[in-house]
Image 1: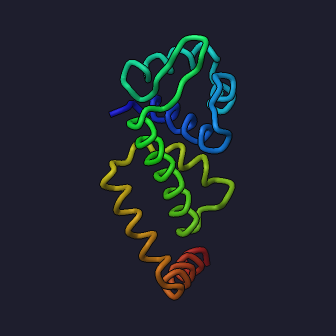
Image 2: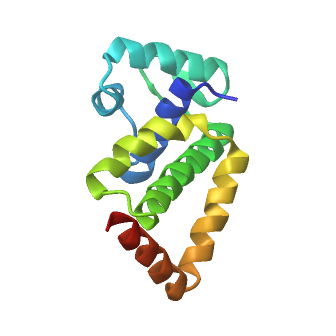
Length: 139
C-alpha cells in the first residue's frame, strides 16, 4: 500500500491526467506546494513501486495499478467532502478537514461512511431530519 505522501501524489497525478490528459512535474509541484525536485524523487519512487511508468526526460503515465489506486483516492476524497457537507460542516472548512482526515481512516471506515451518505441521500426526509437535529444543537 502506498504511504499517505504517495497517495497525495497519485491522487494529483490521476486528477491531472483525467482533466488535462497529462501531468507535468511543475503542475504537481504547484498543486501539492512542493519543490519540483521533490516531485521528481516521488515519481521515481512511484515508478519503482509500479504505480507509474517513468522515462527520464520523456514523462510518465500511471500503470493500471496506479489508475486503480488514483480512482479510489479521488472517490475517497469526494465521498468525505460529501459526508462533511451532509453533516453540516461549513463549506470553507470542508477541503482542509478532508485533507486532515483522509489518510487516517481505514478503507472499512470509508466504506461505512459511504453507506451513511447513501442512507441520507436515499431519502430527502432523512436529510431534513438531520438538518433539524443540527439546528436544535445550535440553539
